[in-house]
Length: 371
Image (cartoon, rainbow, N blue to C red; front, top):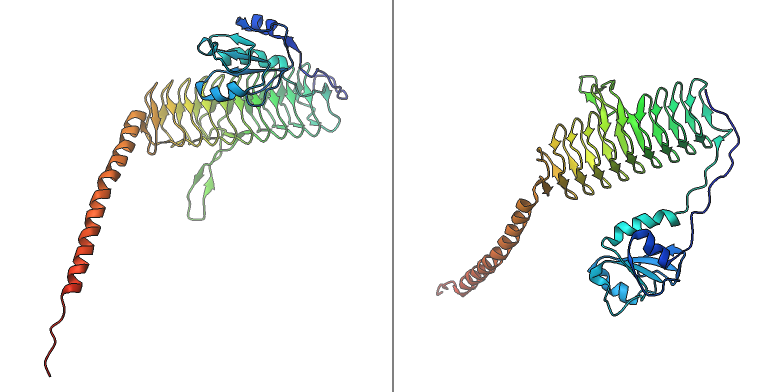
């Protein structure tokens, strides 16, 4: 094993740096209205911001919050700069949210990081550890694993035998990289994420299901991020590949042999069945899913809770179950609403006819027999 073993030593500051309104305007390239000397010490939403906070107003829906806000400085678009109510000191920018993102790093409080390898970590003698790597308490690094420079393996995380991690990789606590998995540079696995496990593959037999051995790889390319408690399975006979820059939310399942393109976004509870193909720039909303062996073209959007059971063309938006083009789905829903309105008068008419029939039956008095 290369690299020096040492006791942890905390490094890094708290990340909070006060800044004046004038300096904020300069940083974001905005136009300042109001007091340039106000000192900004933090960032907060409009409804909770105080006099030392910077906030953002980018949507008409939050006009009421803006009017009542106590924020010291507000980033806003030109459309809102002349509002009579609200904070006086304003920084006018074309894209307030983009400007805010650029400022967040200045106020972000990074997690304290140790240096070296904790004495309780288990590191195989054949593992290769790059320069500047941090391995926290009770982490486990398997035989012949490679950990790239400046990577950070947090407490309880595990890297299986033969796995290769690029530079600046971050494994949060209890993340698991199964054996023979490949992670590119700057990959992030959040707590509880598991990548490279064998997929859900079985062959039914008279004496019970037999597991299919998975000989494919699991490859996460550069800048992929996997959310907490999400799973990416290794391939059975093919590779599972997650393209560069793709971001996966918490509680997502990506099955074996799936190929995901670059810069995709999957929200929480997305499920992708085996051997699916997803192009570049695809977005999938929460609780949406797709069956196995289907393809979603590049640039497509799958709405929340949609169920994909056919191929989706590139750059289209699909919704509903079974998923279909969004406009078609909306027309279908609108037709059902109109149908309900048509049915109500028919139901009232039928109820009246039934009532009239019952009344007519009660008027028919049986003829008596004289004794």
